[in-house]
Image (cartoon, rainbow, N blue to C red; front, side, top):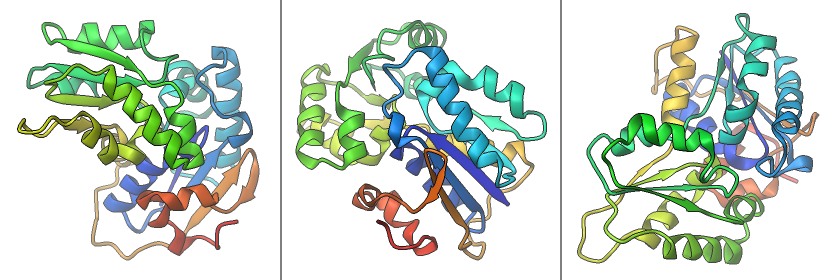
Length: 262
């Protein structure tokens, strides 16, 4: 079994790790585009072009499913990706976990990139799934870029700024960018108030991984023998995991199946 994932950068690591937890025997193809990162400020047409390039590079390795592990690409490029690759290659998009976050009431905060915050897409999800729930959108300028570089000082500053704009007393926080899942516990610590219940974090990686398996008719098998299959593609060229990936548990978990990072 081969599962391919695409993203502008390291945001695909949480979903890749989730796939490995569900199916340790799955071979992974990680196709990202660090030369054009970030995708958020680009036009929809430009995002679509870059996402298609990543997907075509991954498709050359004949995966069984393709995960679009990026909220921005899922918003803008899914129709084009599905038109080109389905039904032969199932394409699974990423949707911010607003529905499960608001299911038990609020208040809820949604952390996302400036391009996504306030967008018609995100507002539509709020209208569909958060009716009657107090929901606050919080823009996080610079956080995805800082995570991509594994820049600890910039990560801390971006998280602190976003936490300052997050109302106190929230019950749940939606991680509306896949990069944010790599620093989830630091985000939780920043918004957690002493003496209050633990803030529930809602990312997309687990649900996306499970949906990919469903689309190809595969069952979870956490006890399966681990695979050594890992292909890394950076802006169309086969490579190894970038060194910044090793700053995160999700990246380190993949290194056993990868050559030493450059």
